[in-house]
Length: 468
Image 1 (cartoon, rainbow, N blue to C red):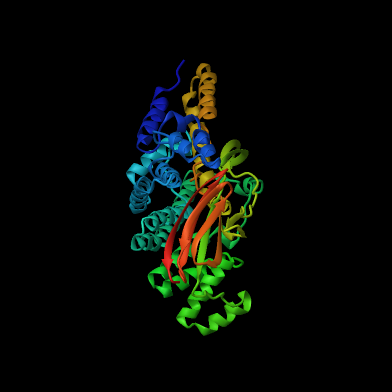
Image 2 (cartoon, rainbow, N blue to C red):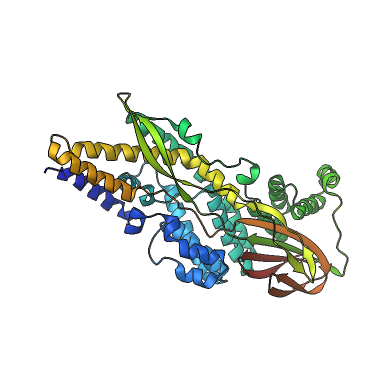
């Protein structure tokens, strides 16, 4: 029996080279959503302490993704220094990745290993919206510690890193298409994508109104009205029905003396409520729930080789199940209900991002399946007795290792809402479910209240923004 040892050696060598990325038994025979299920459910239920205990003690998603999850979980635990340290580690890994050439020896070696197993062995490239949230949460960690300038630095970087990521992703997609052409492979993507679960294409699925609105508030608090107005307008474009955003945009336009804009904004949203000398403003940002996890989707894909021969392959792709929008859960301020309006739906953004990269994922699946089939044929060549065994070995290997790439930042909030309320100056009681939180509102001042709410629990804190 002669199963060609050199092909087995090639597989082992390639998998060994991918150790610098995410090589582990878990990633070889399972996928990200499965491996992080306990941690995800703990966050979903609002058990932040258990979630921190359930964080993996080894790399599952890689340096970028694992540290994003840790940073988010520790932020919910109100361990802000620890949260920022993990987010900074993720940021450093992102910088290193973005500074790499599109074709780099280390990255190609890691990717070679994935071609013998699955995409979970590749280095994780964060989605644009995830990069936005990374810098948003770094900014919030500085706000929590009353470091406004540090927060503004992170918000300025948010747009830069997202733009750089988009450009690099487009370049890599072209590279993958060229490689398929060189291999003489012509996949019928139209037939596959016709059945693939789709998503929306609204502006809300592309732009992060949460990021823009927070940026506008902090710029305004720092006295930078021009940059504040730019980001308020961007937030308003994403969430045109959000009263908090509309009022902030109008307030900033009035300060800048932009009379034409003021007239247009008043026509659509009415006049801006004025604070008396005994009143203050409360701006609430409410995160709610957790973003959906990716699941595995099986489909058959016809692939035409260089000789025009069609082969039907089974592919394992990530997908999101049915989309369910959510309304803001009720909160009260001094026993008066406050209705929040949506800033961002992270589930929409996640679905849109997946749809943009699914073609690239399919390209890699095709390359992998084609390579595995070639190895299977070579291993049994000129050896009829060994052909059956070779086919069995490769079929088992393919069945065990062909896992969908379900990596994504799964501890992000499912949706985010904001609300603005004018109240009497002095002590206020904020109630979320069974939790109460007391804070002071200065006369003619603006108080920022941040909460993240999952299951029956919520983390709440506030900061003063001065006279906006």
